[in-house]
Length: 65
Image (cartoon, rainbow, N blue to C red):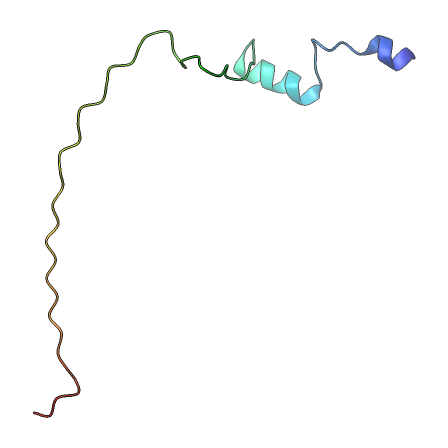
């Protein structure tokens, strides 16, 4: 029972404390449906089409010369 009384759920374990010290308070997971930043991001410009030209030349090894 003494261990339960000593445990502080808001403090967390040693790993959580190290992360909190390194990253700063608060460490919270992303909330579903919420944007990552407060500022709305500008839409990305439409990608321009990319064209690739490919030419293959093969020699038929079965034909007699």
